[in-house]
Each structure stands twice: as structure tokens, then as C-alpha cells.
Length: 381
Image 1 (spheres, helix red, strand yellow):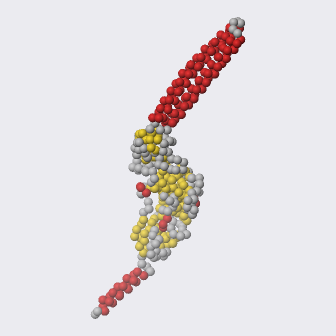
Image 2 (cartoon, helix red, strand yellow):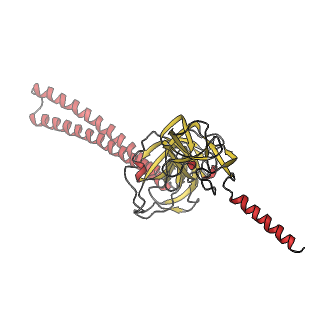
Image 3 (spheres, one colour):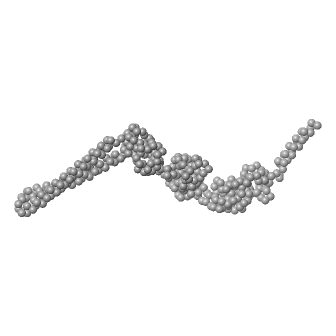
């Protein structure tokens, strides 16, 4: 009687093993349907790209000085020509006043000398008239003509001195303007380095120092990303681009190729790349892009719409697929493909729309001739 449970266990185990090993056991598989849609040939960056501004200036003063006033703060939006920072400039203001005073003196001197020149010219004319009447000696006539000529040169010199005074005034005005930092374009103030009363100096050649004001024009943004040199040959300016950002996962933004670098980067000898820039076409109102965001780009080299397609993962080596036949068996079939990307492959021939194809190629026992049962049909729309 004690042997009965043991015999029952052995019989049950044998039945399970037979069921698992019997040739007609159906294998549960996941499938996908051949459908129509868009397929694009894409080129993607090899390393993460970066969101950049079309205009960004790290502004500095041309000469050192003490900060007298800060007219903006970090994050402020400014217009072109707006005053950002002022330096102490009383000495330069005094030099400008001196230059303007010298111009006034030169102007008065010119008036005086030119009036004297006109008077000398009139006297020379009278002397010539008297000389014709033999009422004036030749020596007196010569003296009158010489005085008139000298007076004329003095007037001309006074005019030249006015030009010198004006140039000196312009120089002092230019030097005074260098004590004021103006916005070269409209944008947002990213960073200010300097406080009121602090002495700031420009960057010496070859020695980078923080800018006085970092100004960014965030109205125009683009992505710069490295593309493998092998893939770069087919890229052209104006091609459509799909842009994705780590900060906005699950979203895709349209753009176009705006620039292709005319040289190859060889920082990594075995992975040479070409920098490609893609400009955003239009951003939704709910997206706030920050300069420096990491970004990826997919450049559309070629695209076909309403074409027969299949998920790329369903195709294995030498363009083979496993099709679900009418009697629920796997049938290995060769197909011809067109353009493809990591998600979709164009089907040129070998499959018809609506046919079910094995999706999970790593399913145990899923080989040609196996009987299957479909547990899940993937939707790749």
C-alpha cells in the first residue's frame, strides 16, 4: 500500500514530461502585423549633443576700472543697446570737458584769424589800387600782399586746428563710452561677474577670466551634435531632423540641418566625427529650453510614406522572417527590404499587408515548422 503514492507521482511526472516533449505542443508567441506607414532612413549622433544659442557673448570691458553701477541682474531680459554696467568715469568726463573746451577755443581762434585774413585781403586790394595810381611804393605793396597771404594761411591753420580738436573730442568720447557696457543684442543676462566698488580687469591675451556679463539670445536655439564621419557624407543642409531632449523624455521636436562643419574632429583617433548643427523649427509654448541641455538628433536622409513596413526587430539574418501560416505553424520566408531604421524596415516583396510575423525571435522552440499559439499581437502604430 505504501508504494501506491510513489507510483502515482512517477506517473504524473512522466505525463508532464511527455506533454512538454511531444512534437505537436503549441508554443506561445508574440506577433506583429505587416502594415503600411512611414519609414525613414536615419542618421543619429554618436555622442550626446548640446543645446546652444545662436548668439551668446561673454562681454568684458576694454580697460580695467572700478564698477560704479550695475543696471541689470542675473536673469533680466534686456534690449539691444541697453546699459548693463557702468565704471567710475569722473576722470574721463573731465577729459571730455577739456576736449570740448579746446574745441571752443579753436573755433574762436579760427573766427579771429579768418576775420584778420579778410581784413588783410581788403588792405592788399586797396594797396594794389594805390600802386596803380603811383600813390604807393612797391615796397609797401609787397608788404600788404605778404600780410594778406600770411593771414590766409593762418585762417587755414585755424580750420585744421578745429579738425584736431574735434578728433580729440571724439577720442575722449570713445574712451568715455568704454566705461559703459552696452548690450550688443537683445537677450537674457545669464551671469554677472562684478560688484559695485569692485575693480575689474579685461582678460589678458591667452589668460581666460570670467566675463563681466554673459549675455544669451535665447530667441534662436540650435543643437550641435557629433555625427560619425562615415554617416556624415550623406547629410545636407536643409534636411529634416528629429530632436529629442533628456529633459523632455517622450517628446520629439522638429528641426532642420543648418550647418555641417567643414572639417573632421579627431579628438578620438578611432571615432572621428563631424559636428552637425540642427535648428529648431518651432517650439511649443509649454517648453522652456535651457542653454546646455543634452540633446540627440536623428537626421532624415530619406523618407517614404504609406509604404509596406515591418518592425526591424522581427527580421533576422539575411532578411528572413517567421510568418504565422493558416494552420498556425511558423513558416520561414525570405523577403526583400528597402530603407530602414532601428524601428521600421520597408518591405519591398515577400510579405503582404496584414500577415502576422513572429516578433520575439528569442522565444524558445520558435523555429520553422513549430506549431504556435498567438498570445499577444504587438501594436507599433
